[in-house]
Image (cartoon, rainbow, N blue to C red):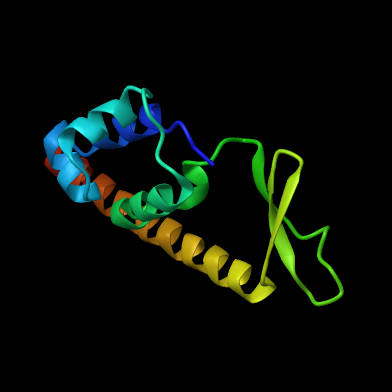
Length: 129
C-alpha cells in the first residue's frame, strides 16, 4: 500500500524549522528521495510510514488517509480485530492493536506536554506570565 504524505511531511518539516536535508537525515532517507516524497511524486510504503511516525514521534494515524480506520466491530471469536483500508479488512491480534493504541496515546500525551511547555515559554517571553 502506497500512501501520499508529502503535504503532511512538508507541514511537519516547516513547523520544526528544518530544511529538506535535515528532515531526510532524521527519517533515514536520501535528500532526493525525501524531496520526491514531499512533492508527492513518489509514495513511501506502509513500513516506511511506520518508521517516519516513530522517528517524528507522530501517531501513525495522522499519516493515513481518512479511509483507514480501526475496526473492532468485525472482531472474530478469537478476539481479533483489524484495520479497515476502504472496504478491505486486515485482521491483527487484538492485544497488538491495544498496544499500538496505547503507544499512540502516549505520543499524544508527550505532544500535549511539549506544546504546553512551548506555550508557557512563549508567554514568559512575551511578558504574559
